[in-house]
Amino acid sequence: PTSRGAKINKSVHANVSAKSICSYFEVEIPTSQEGPPRQAISVEDLTPTIKDLLKDSGMKHGSINVISRHTTTALTINERESRLAQDMEKYFLSLAPPDERSSAETAQAGVAYFHNDINQRPDSAEEAQRCRENGWDIDDEGELQKWRDQEPINAHSHLLSMLVGSSESIPVVDGEMVIGQWQSILLVDLDGPRTRTVGIQFMGYE
Image (tube, rainbow, N blue to C red; front, side, top):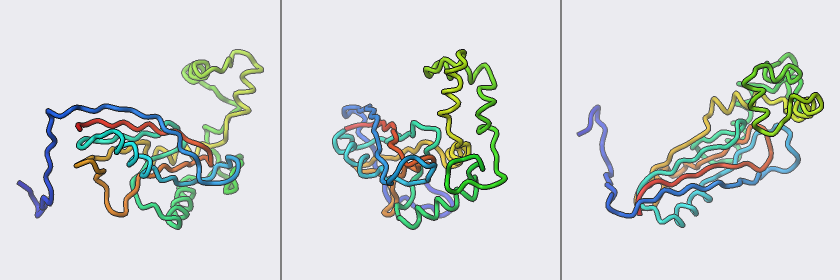
């Protein structure tokens, strides 16, 4: 049954007695942009990589979960088109322009974020412990300064990542991803260009 005029065009039900699949892949995504990291925004199409992994998995029905493993990248499903990618960059930077202290070419005078006050961090016991867990002996003044020196001025990239989102779930029916004709699964690098990593999990049935 449907409501409000909705129409079911297709209905497929998996054979749950078939062999189940639960596979996870951690995949490096090289940047398509040139040059060293400069807090640029770029878009990488994950669709061909995911299609290849799906074919190799043998999964016919289920879902694919994709997650970014970085706090300054995002995932979205939309059209992969070069001029749209330029529009995305322009729009995102209008929402969250880079700090005036940033090395980004688009750094904006008068813009400042608390996260970028590196000389005041870590400013809580929780953040200090996370630094230690990630290999930084911040109890040593020299190591603390090294940590501060390598921290980028990139609060705007974090904020944009939160707005766009860091994961997507795609249904799989009859061995094909259920996405529209013009839809692609896109990794948006908000602090690049650089090689990034995504996690891809397949859960379903052969």
